[in-house]
Image (spheres, rainbow over the protein chains, first blue to last red):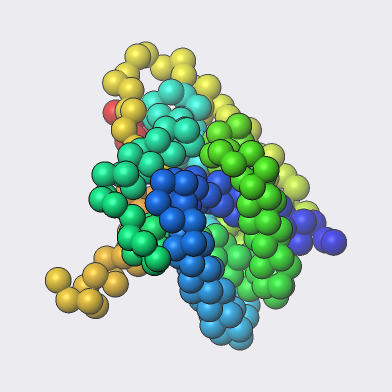
Length: 251
Length: 64
């Protein structure tokens, strides 16, 4: 595999693993407290919807002229990457609450219990919560699969990396039967943010007409460069005078 | 709110998120790259510099 292909596979795998851990927590909560059958129907329906999005938009994206595609894809990846990095840096600096799967599981379980008695047979609440959880967590991953895959003309590799991540997370969930609170989600989020930012800057500049010194090898400098800058910013924020800690949402 | 407005809002929130200045900055940086490259000058440095500046500004806004 070439460097960009490895970057594609690793970025999609990590992004998908983070989102799959969060979706697993939601599905576990409604499955344990209400109805496994209805929750799994919700998971299946959301997975089909996500697969349909990838199948419908993938070929259309790969048909676009490469430079136009890289400007749009690079710009969007850079926006997503900066958002992921910002959250990761703020958490690392203690200015945003760390994502806590045990806490999220407790909140989802409480909500499921207070939603009334589970229906015998098909439970609409379990289906809807599982469907929405998997669809919403999966949409960003589907977008990353499409954009990375289309830019490399390799949607298949991106989709395979996403599928492997889902299988790994689901198997881990089946084994421990508990939210995967030991997965270092915030660290993974940092790495995904670095990769999206580096690839977004690289492809966006290429699409806009710039030429990188060294071609694709520029990514070998961009990826560690972005990581070092983001780590320095986290360190700077940690050392800055005490500020009001934002401990709101953990999403 | 009509379904069209709801769909537009969902796309906006999905793409832009809670920091529209970052999205705007990325668009401006891409435009600047195209202008500089079109003039025949090296333009590869614009996007990395913009990414670092936008992250720093976004963090500064969030930390306030």
